[in-house]
Length: 128
Image 1 (cartoon, rainbow, N blue to C red):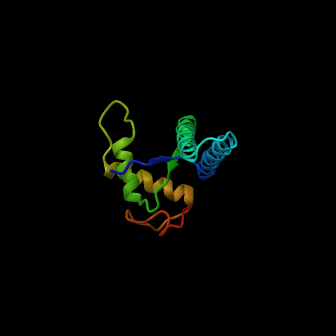
Image 2: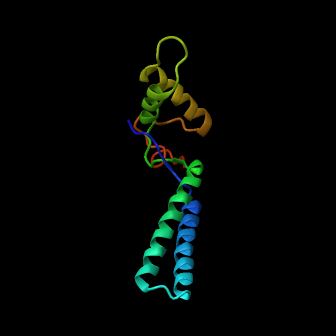
Image 3: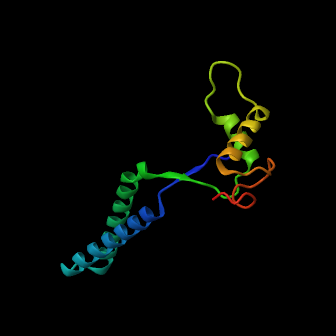
């Protein structure tokens, strides 16, 4: 079973990258200005950039969102729901019991009436 991955939004990844590059440049510029040897400038810049990257990743961890995979099918959704949804007290739902519910939701919400369990949301049903 596939579990969706968490990723930072593209704008946030770009901002963290710019932040790390700016940190590297700032440390290198200031260390060079003070007359620090070249090897030490490089070492300080790399160490400072790694520290800032670590800090930025920790501070933005709560901003991660689910990265939706391309190519989910209706059958995949039924299997996912039957495996991971919390169940009320009583017997668990089977894939066969969930299938009509998923089909009804997709038909009602998206207006799609002709599809199979192997229909791909993106490619077959054009639901982006």
